[in-house]
Length: 266
Image 1: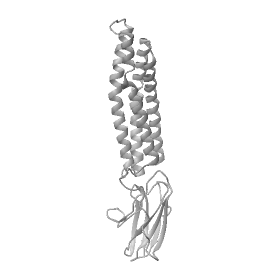
Image 2: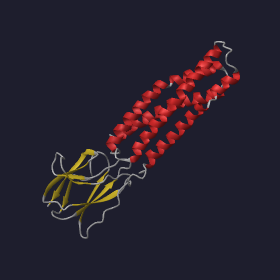
Image 3: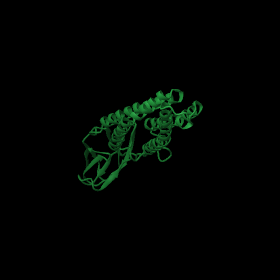
Image 4: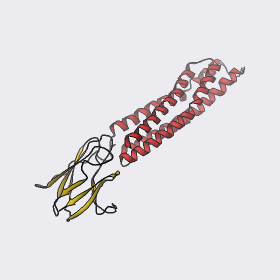
């Protein structure tokens, strides 16, 4: 399901960029176009993209929120930074673009109706106001920043991307486990010695989705005995666990509860 929601998110991104592209095209043409009637038409063209723009924005947010939840990304700094950049750039663009297009539209329509209160030079200054160009720069820089954060997923100094491997006690038993998707682990049942520290070598083979291993006292997952750090980007982590008493314990990925199994400690 994670990849499907990423697909929904990207569909929203595509629609968002397409609608945004219409507005950007109109803004650049307005700066270069001297014919008031054509300028008025360009303002209307830009306004016509607002509906698809907000619809795509909603799809983008829906897909992103669900994918981030399924992928276990809410604890990472990069996703909050991405949201911050998106909100800040969107608000800044709206604050600049709306008064700019409204003013250009009013002047252009007045000239079409035959007013002589505005000269060609004044009309040119209105069309070429810095705020129009600033909208394009803010949009481009904001998009580049969001793409960087999504692709490279930096920690931004708020924590490592993945913790370093823990030192394994000499002679400790080792258990291997991996995650190849958001549906299940590579094994549904693990075995470990009772009363001894043991090591779980956990490999996340699904780049782009964070997984962990957490061991609980009961099937209701109400009390954790061990909670492993999340790992992503196809990395492997070493969990040092125990010692645990003789018994049977459920384990799962905390971000994907459907990924679960049983640990037999004997």
